[in-house]
Length: 308
Ligand SMILES: [Zn+2]
Image 1 (tube, helix red, strand yellow):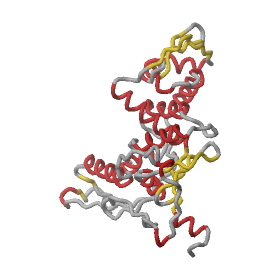
Image 2: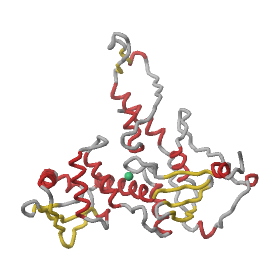
Image 3: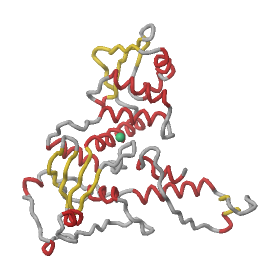
């Protein structure tokens, strides 16, 4: 459980990591007399060990926080330059700095997220109205626009809920929603939870409800659609465990995000990438899907048989 909590949203639902843990501990902190064949031991301070494991894994998987801001005019001021390998200003080997302790080998998505923090990223364009392509010093960074925006909205919603409660946007005309019997009961039982999420609903007779507010951060979502999806999530329970309210925030982030297939302007792409860099977990969307992938010059050279 500590390992899973350490991974947090970095894993797809239903996936499990393979982990080898080395735990060094004072012998007197372990009780070896709990199992006749010594197949199990008990830690005296189990909660402390749990915490250490969780935070060590979280730390090992976190990209180094550089917090550099994207250079907005880089695409104008610096024409694309192809460097021959000999004259290359940078090494083709990715040497992530700083290295997390313990000889940790980064996973491909961690390399991608390190590429995200390179000081100079040039946005090349949008591919298939779904991916943002960026040139980095090490190659090509591919960003899934929906997953990136989902991560940003999720963290913003979570932060603003923790700080002062979600800012709401009152609908000019309340939206009426007609529900089935079960759904109506779910709403009645969860009026307060919905309110915490910035959604005020009022019983409007029978199985009909009025939606008065939506979270301001979500902007142009369809109030009916979001309420229906929240009801569905409450009904289905929590697939990943954890607190219901965070599962509901995930649903809201997903619906409020740009979709795949949506045109983005250059400025929108710059905005998305620079906000993504500020996120606590810029590697995965709240459902655990990767946000970025990286194709290094080395990968490309192999692909084109420049090197074998
Ligand atoms: Zn997602």
